[in-house]
Length: 244
Image 1 (cartoon, rainbow, N blue to C red):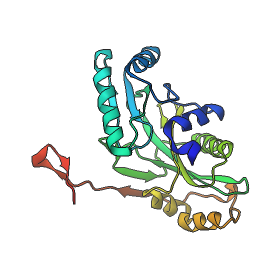
Image 2: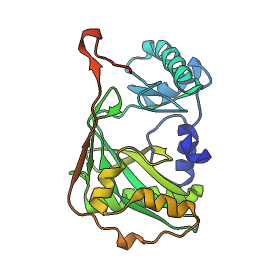
Image 3: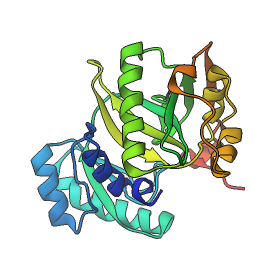
Image 4: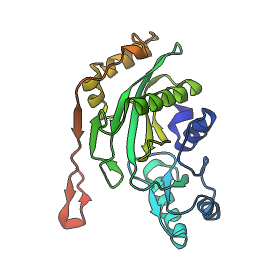
């Protein structure tokens, strides 16, 4: 979790595992000057992201070089307020991609399986709104390639637990590592519905030191599941989220 829980360290781990990833920095940016240098190297548009968290906090899309300095300051300040760390990194903004995540489960005995994918391309303010399993655009071949890449990353880092590896996928079925969530996510029930597996139960067995009771060949996807999130927003206050 220390290796993969940080977005910048996870990008380094992805490089070490030979995974394709979104171009950009692999460490936190020291200052605006470094951000300008990285952005010039990969080209605009770019995205600034908080290294210590997610949920849309500390994220800023930048389409012009003259807007980068202000965006860097805003992203860093928001990251500091939200996560206690102002560290941000920069990556290429891939426009209109599919956002596909692979659910995996790894034990302490060197076994790891991927449990299909969830699509979360429908988002608002960088927050997932609809989670769907399986994805309507993921072929068997793409599912296998992404799943094997996710497993390779987990095994190379010695990861043990449930986890989700997130990818961006383009129209040509090229996929790029985005980040890893080193926990069980709120959208895990759609995976449970299509696999018939109780992920919390598997987590507990893994935590007790037991080996996984299934192999990759045992994983079968059946049916379809969709989860929708509801956000309470105030239309009379610029659609800010209600609190309390």
